Length: 95
Image (cartoon, rainbow, N blue to C red; front, side, top):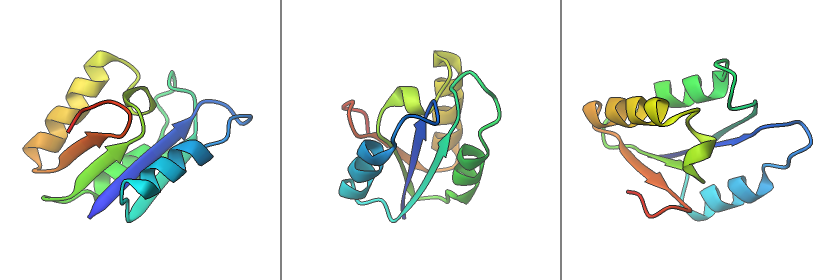
């Protein structure tokens, strides 16, 4: 399964661009939320990561929508790799 995650930082921002890009990338399920990257409370991201199974692919529009820091990004990617989950960023050439 291809699963996407989108995040906007403020209530005024529109996630439509991200959601459209994730749909175009073939995401069968998309989690999205409005939460600042500085907050640790991102329940939709937690739910998304919990749904991923071996051989799934996790897709984000852009890396900064996923992680608060490089350290967080590396931890998330490492966890996905251990679990056998693929990763892709739509706007950066990362698979």
